[in-house]
Amino acid sequence: MEDLKKMNATYCVTGANGYIGSWLVKLLLQRGFMVHATVRDPANKRLLHLLSMWTGGDRLRLFKADLQEEGSFDEAVKGCHGVFHVAASMEFSVNVENGNIENYVQSNIIDPAINGTLNLLKSCLKSKAVKRVVFTSSISTLTAKDSTGKWRHVVDETCQTSVDHAWNSKASGWVYALSKLLTEEAAFQYANQNGIDLVSVITATVAGAFLTPTVPSSIQVLISNNRSTGQKEGCSIPSEISSKKLRDLGFNYKHDIKDMIHETIACSVDHSFLPPIRK
Image (cartoon, rainbow, N blue to C red):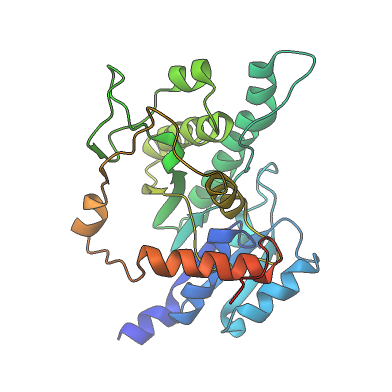
């Protein structure tokens, strides 16, 4: 019965050629599901590398789709039971020499992100088949400080950074955080108004082995931040990033931090992002 369910279940993954998206495609195929993978350019030669990493190709269909084109995802989500919305801009900061930086970020990054997600949700609504949409948020949308500026002992889903604070502080990665915050807000508003079952998953900084032919942005940020030695005076780390909500839903972690670091370094060395390890 379980095998029969898998044969009939189809899932769409947006941004399938990205770090998280490529792993989602691989794992869904391994578990026997049909997968509709969307990319902006199916003719891109870099996809050949990913296609060689994805087993179960007979259950995989590639779709050309652009978030900025309304209706672009209609075919990709048709007949799908669920959609994983992973595609997103990876702009962490911007430099605007002439003009208003807030206006630039709003019109060139945030508005396209919101419109793209709404376009996808409109396609899901039109399909009449999609049962659930999973939106990938980011830990950058959370804050480890309370309203008084003190460090929290535990950080969880309730510790969301306010939009006003993100605009005003312009802390490291503020553009990406704002884009995620405002896109998620617009997505839930549309989903609630139209009866779409939408779930947001807050991902931490993603690390470990990667399938992409180039080093993912999160790996570059992670390694670059850790190349500096020592800890800044007054810097503190929250005692716990809580995963209680996930665990209560039955999620179990399979890999520990040592495995993740080892695989991150090994893949980065293979891609010449890090020098070879001396033995």
